[in-house]
Length: 149
View 1 (cartoon, rainbow, N blue to C red):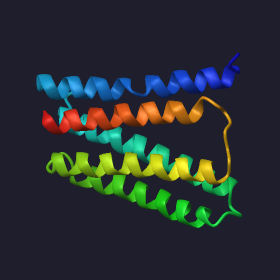
View 2: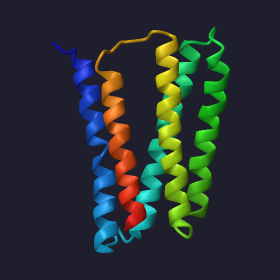
View 3: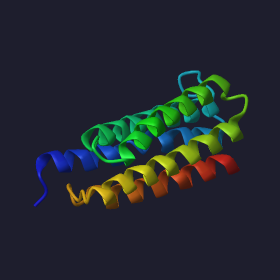
View 4: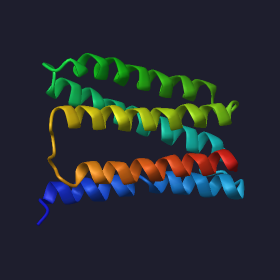
């Protein structure tokens, strides 16, 4: 049976897809939401989530500070946050480039986090890595669809 915190983590993680789906729908229909262009909605939410994931990477690095990968994870977490910030400064004028950079960021954060968890043999919570794999795949697909819009 899942722990209450694990259930909450899973629900919140999947609910985090809703703003992506809403902004993607706005892109398709060329509809503003709160008088904000759909490209800006998509980029802003994507950048916020990439920064959030970079923060998780930072936390993982701190938790495993004795490992040689920790230094790289700390540097990468800052790099991903700077990428997200840079994208916010250029979007929506350079929408395709912004989406590609964010897409790269999501894949790279996922890969870095997965490697740290593998090296540290961190398997708890057991549902976390499969959930991250699915979510990252969905987010990548959403970004590819946004590029095609």
